[in-house]
Image 1 (tube, rainbow, N blue to C red):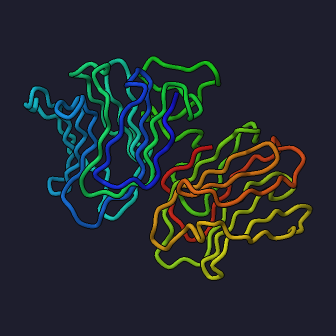
Image 2 (cartoon, rainbow, N blue to C red; image 1 turned 180 degrees about the horizontal axis):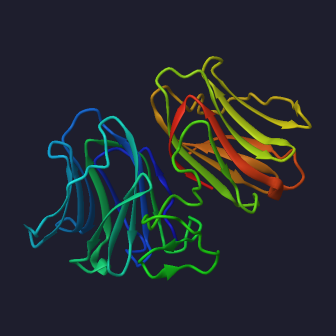
Image 3 (cartoon, rainbow, N blue to C red; image 1 turned 90 degrees about the vertical axis):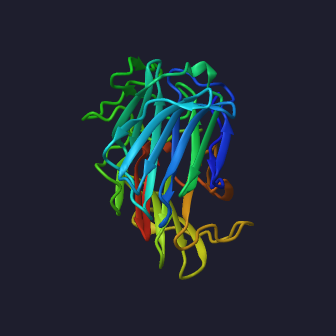
Length: 315
């Protein structure tokens, strides 16, 4: 059983590992570093005292410190003299738990490995504190939520799906991520097409002076779903483009209103239900859009354009 993703939680942040920590647990933390502040920390804790894994980027020193605290005493520091974070910039941290260590990537680049000093069976809490804001914290049980992947060096390959080949040393990039970076405009293939219960997750930040952006789910004959927040019109347009012609626009606003704001981070979920796309933003239901194409599996491309930066895309 995986946790439900937690959107825009306050910092300091603390949550319980409901199913404990296991070989293959994946923790994904998305957010932004504040413009000011010296450091932040991600802690895998044993109750309120012991810390099995302390991941501590320090901007004043330009490094990352990792350590363990047991019986009120800190152990020997392990230091990484490279800082993969920048003040005022978004990030995505992925921490894969294996039977031997914690493997950490930042923005899909492998950063470090930290061998266990405390058995993972004792770890029951996750906390984040310091100079960051958080857009999403997602804890995935082994084989849950994200399409299974092969994690180099971890000795794991979940058999439900074929492992995805990923070049380089990064053992756990974003799921089905085929672009080298998240440049806008952004395009990626949806291998195998869409199907009921399929979920697409997009995490990003609206630029400071936006006009509009859009998310398109495309197929060979056009655009099956066009999701288009328009700040200049203060509305969210939904539509499809079939046979080179746009259909009837849907503009009804959700009860939560315009759920995107200049300079603010967001997480969009597009869920393929039986008869419609259901869109959530930051945990709030935005709209349903009834299918206008007969076969979901013909939808093979995700496109994102406009006044946003992207942190993470899961297809």
